[in-house]
Length: 294
Image (cartoon, rainbow, N blue to C red):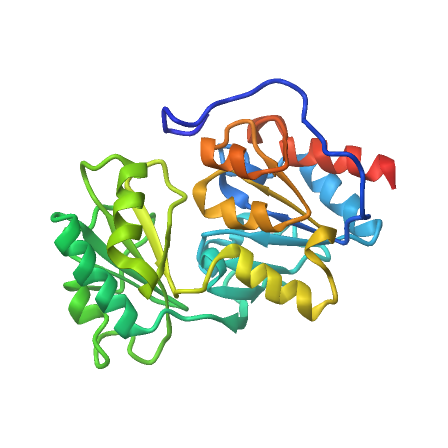
């Protein structure tokens, strides 16, 4: 179960929509979805992904993680070497292996928009602290908590980090992270979306009050749609899996979509089907059944 009392766990069998258009692409979130809680990929899941690709179905990892955190699945790449990272901010080729990922597409957050988002959220939610995620660098404010297992490249107020001549000025900004120590996570998301408006896209994937802020039109769904269009794949031919609010747009867009048994209520409402929890190999269960029908 996720560390959030709003996220439920289910043990019932998957609800599977009736077979329709044959799938051509599987889009799966990682944390809380494809990965078990210990961040491993089960042998059953590895086998299911390999079987899908053998059947001619492409696999995309679609995650809020930055590229440098993709080592968790690098050894399971097989044919599915492309990943959508940073909630749609980057498309990354994983074939180079750990530490050698190549950025195929970057959809950056303009620094002007990022600064507007910081200002508006500081006014709406005093006490919010920030970190800045770039293609290769990670920067944070001094009071930003140690939520990530890494050492930031620089400590400074967000306004300095996002300045045109600030640290990492030669790299695009993929997203900013906003953390509040006491606001309810869902309430913080709602408040932030109202405050920031169309200047940026705001979502969350953490059980804590940690928001992820990207470019105005950037989401898992919009970048996945671009990648599918390049391949001549329609949304009806996509099967998607997810568990948290940052998956909602993708699950709504895909022709078939599955909320994990441990999913946030908004995800359950958005998906067309439901599978068992990540620790019970919910993605593999659906893929196995899907391949039986082909």
